[in-house]
Amino acid sequence: MIDIDKWTEIYGTIKRHKLRTGLTAFGVFWGIFMLVLLLGAGKGLENGVMRDFDVAKNAVFVWTQRTSIPYMGLKAGRFVQLTSDDVAAIKANVPEVDIVAPSNQLNGDFTVIRGTKNSSFTVNGEAPEVLRVVPIKVPEGRFLNDKDVNERRKVAVIGPRVVELLFDKDEDPLGQYINIKGNYFLVVGTFSTSSSDEQGQQDAQVIYIPHTTLQQTFNQPNRVGSLGLIPKPGVPAKVVEDKVKTLLMKRHQVAPDDVKAFGSANVEEEFKDVQGLFTGIAGFSWLVSIGTIFAGIIGVGNIMLIVVKERTKELGIRKALGATPWSIITLIIQESIVITGFAGYVGLLAGTGMIAFIDYMMTKLNVQAGFFGNPEINVSIAVTAVVVLVAAGTLAGLIPATKAARVNPVVALKDE
Image (cartoon, rainbow, N blue to C red; front, side, top):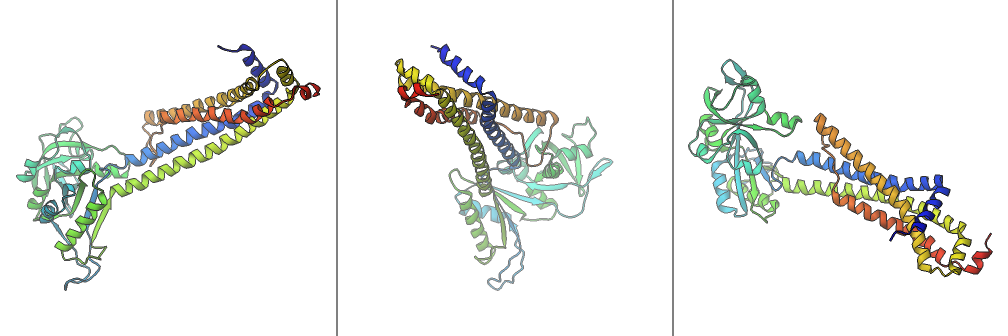
């Protein structure tokens, strides 16, 4: 049942101290507003960075460099060449590996020709397994398959920039041929890129062909440029990284302590570092906002102490007429919760509205703000903020309420 008298009293108290109540409530409002804004911005930064993680979160990449230590009669500075035999050896000797995707690249100066049009592009030799390592969206046609690799077919999957420069605007590239260094390749698919940054622009200019076809057609017999690896479920990427590099060192007679002979990138470790960074950002956001809210709580508590002081005689009369300490405590705490709850709820709405507006404008205008993506607010964050508000209101009124409950009716009635 709603106690009209209590709500009337609360309204009267707030009305008598409008400026003081408003300034104090602003502290709570600003704390919640900044909490929502900072957490939303942190999530936007996370979304932007994760957008650039366009590879499997547990992927490992391995490539060769030059040796830095002489070993077994071989001089330092020797370049190690990966081969298809290394791929077979990894599959046979490293059971923790689930996927091995060999990759090549066509080097040298050349242009890709189609009719009267030509331009320079990056030509990569890939295996179908690369889709498990680097997700590639193929909106038209298909990607490379095992038959393409086994039969060394001259087929190609081309990026959006390739389509734009080699084909007319409304022309369907599927089923057409492109000339790569005097060899004709059938276009069987096109892929799209999800980013418009520099990396996305580079990816848009790539042509994928089977890696075995690149080896045979362009005089790279048995050569592999780099390896993309995916561990089996439950296996840390670091285990695969270490075991594969150790195996390759043995196969290519590289000193076990030569850290420069093989380069590697562990996406899982990088992903953990990034996640840790965003956890820290979220923690900092909570720390700053809770500090602001706490300052507001102190202000609310001071107001309630003043209210108790001003209403000493009234509280004495209430107790003389039989009011229980609990009824007085609930009255003061209720007033405190109303101030903090209302101010915090408005701050929550304002912060959520600001995040929604920024998200809407970025989506509508298709804004790519570097590493910053679309901000968003988790529902659980909003619920947590509401819980914080209720707890804050209770805490702010607890000390004044306790003091009010201890008022001596006799002393209170003498108060001027």
